[in-house]
Length: 459
Image (cartoon, rainbow, N blue to C red; front, side):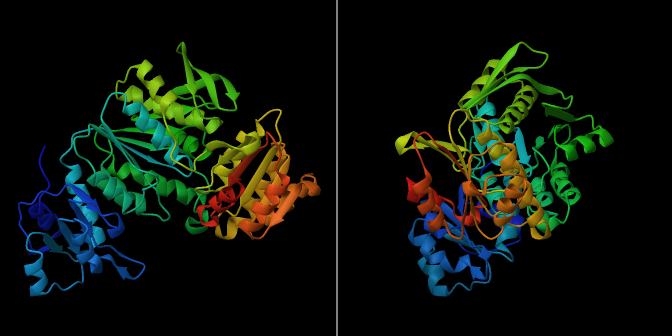
């Protein structure tokens, strides 16, 4: 395997080597000086008006072997002081980070699976990576490190890996186009097209267009996997019928399908249609059945034996704050799904809570952000889901969540079973008075609502 060197970095970024040796090997990259480890290369990104390159001395003091900077002048004194390090000056450090990642990607002839979608990107990525890891040493996106900085940093973590699963997020048109051309996937996945960022993009049609950008980087003979139960993707597939596309679903006829689904509180089981294979999914909710079908599609493409695919599904671990189920005192079950929220993920989480039997069900729901002019309508639709799924108690927090409450009441929900709160502290105090033994409590809101504050206070 070819090593990435300072000389390579200077070449691909058209940068200037201020100090250091061209032959120095570069293995680990970091954009946050607080997280620098020995041997790292610090990339000083300009973000929110702050130039991370200003902290290059701190990076060196913490063990960095090199820094990539822009708009920073290095004195002769510092060149002498850090002569055992290297400093490369570039025009744009973010673009340089992406260029270096794209170059490093070219070293690897391995399966690269890229995952995007309005809902379920992270959980699908986790499950797919678990399946792929049954056969290959696999690198995956950590957490939801899925943006214009996170994707390049994931690729730059490639070492002796034999496969990579990378998550791609976006807020605007054109963003996934950049990421997929860096990652150059051999398998591309769209989990669904919903309403996330609709306030920015303006329509679900534009969201579909943004997600389909993932195909721009798909390699020759690459495969495209889509959720055929999603209305937008189903319509696109019917109209396009690309030969390299594999579909999965429960409702619509697809290449990979589940039947005889049995939902349980702690998971689901089903039979893979057309095969005498029983699949066990360790997390509850129909959306995780869909995730598993997607993972099976990936496993089949990579010729992973079915027993290994099943093991990967059964043993996968969710990234924290995604349907993170835990117990607190009095045998109360907490369902922490508060990393982010849009209508589609709200609906899925409420449906999961609604399937709980013989226990009181409390939904603590907060604002969904970035919905723009669609905010009132989509919060009202969440209120309809609360009623439809027979939730026992509704707690709403935030300015927009009031529309959840209003629609729930309009649909017949008992007003005496609703608690409206302005702050997380108020919600925590009310919950402490409401909670009873054996309750199930769902927490769901956009990350900006900081619902962890409520969970921490009631624990």
